[in-house]
Length: 266
Ligand SMILES: NC(=O)c1ccc[n+]([C@@H]2O[C@H](COP(=O)([O-])OP(=O)(O)OC[C@H]3O[C@@H](n4cnc5c(N)ncnc54)[C@H](OP(=O)(O)O)[C@@H]3O)[C@@H](O)[C@H]2O)c1
Image (cartoon, rainbow, N blue to C red; front, side, top):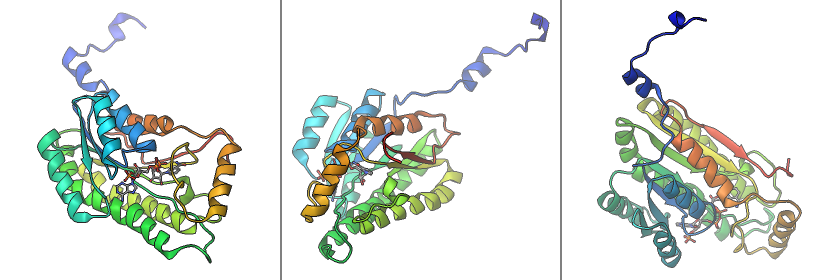
């Protein structure tokens, strides 16, 4: 091919066509940022240049992480099952950091037990946090996200679980809450996608975190420990990296659903 065949493209159009994989100037909110996947995600987004609001109940952990990140982090202690408190938290984030454009609804609990002996109060906790809390988070920030989408990228990331697809006896209710998260993501994608909001569902498999440490059923808790010890678990940073990758893609690309499992587990 001779030089005569090469199209001459003005510099401005080349700049316009380039992909911006940066997280700089993004304003992120991460629920469940006091430990595990949420803490690693908050840290990773901040490393990528985003400002980050850290939501969760344990204020001491949030403050510690905020101090580690520096002045682009804001600790906002909140229980996501308290809708009024979530509404207040939304106001605090807007006032202190600006309009959020990247919301990671990650807070969750996993309390396993056989279905016929499981504590109904534990089912209620999972329904409250994993579904109602996630809904309160998404609804609380949805106006900011649709408004942000008009100006650039806007992301609602739902942290589900591989338990929505795989079969883990002893985790019927937990798995059902995560299947609900998956379907919620599909519907929200259809509702919000046309307005430019990317709704993405990230479904991790076994990851080394505190999840499940507080379940009442000692047998299921011990079996979880054995399952974890038998493989090389993923690390919270592995999931954080996937979330950061999706959020930093160009606005036209949505990493809609991502199943991430440990290599040694089918
Ligand atoms: N680890 C895994 O193997 C795995 C696998 C699949 C999916 N996931 C999902 O990943 C997400 C994060 O879990 P993780 O593994 O990182 O476990 P984790 O370390 O136990 O983190 C759970 C987070 O949720 C927060 N949280 C719980 N109840 C809350 C409430 N009422 N209000 C506000 N925040 C609340 C906790 O903070 P506070 O206690 O401070 O409130 C904590 O920061 C969960 O949705 C979980 O289902 C994890």
